[in-house]
Length: 322
Image (tube, rainbow, N blue to C red; front, side, top):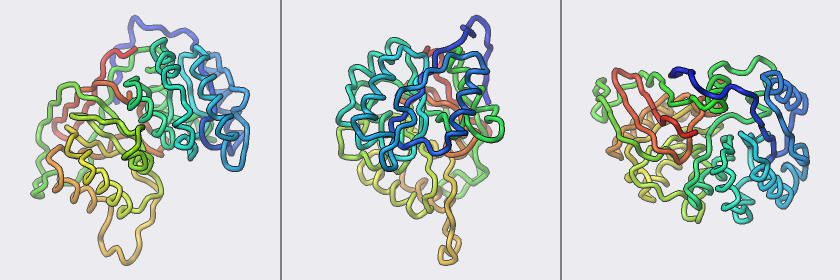
């Protein structure tokens, strides 16, 4: 991973606000472990009054979760971190006071989360243009029984201390050329808006006021528990909606926890990647360290980033957004 010089930045304690805009916390021991870890790092951790609320599968009813979002926006925290994602943000999108969220971001609050939180992030981007951060959630990433992943923790620290400038990774080993050639062409893209997140959540927003209309962007995607044919079906929707043709690059993160069947007969995730490369002119890059995996980088959703690829090494750079 790319970690630039740390000099001259603020390493003091940070104010982290924990709230639940989607599903109810399932593992309270993990929740407590996560809080203890963040506090042990010296941060002031404030827990929303309804962070552990429950209404069926949700962290409180829709009004409760909306109020939690608005309290997070009013908290003045350095980071507003979701307790858990799963499902629930799409239900409350019409009730979010986007100007309040955008003002909080302008004042320095970074909204961090992923998976179902993609709905919130896309809506904020579509309605205000403000930048949020795709990254960990409290319960799963900070509350794991093992120590939190070092790269995830380092990237989170980069965000808090204001010296995260980008991230690098090694591309997958597959032959990237549409003609089957093994050569990965050099790529140097000028700054373009980075956006995306969970594929299923993103595609569910097409045709709504909460889907960002990004031209010339860099789209990143990940998912969990979706068979490759379902991933292809969702990519097909993005393709037929004209979204993919408008992007400068597509970055595929981690697609995990699915099971292939005997009747797939060799059809697998790589088949989908190969197919996608024959349908769009933009480069399709794999192995981005982001998704439902412990090792995840933090990505600025809506920020201009530059992309460079050389000899299977990819580098995303966003400079100082802090």
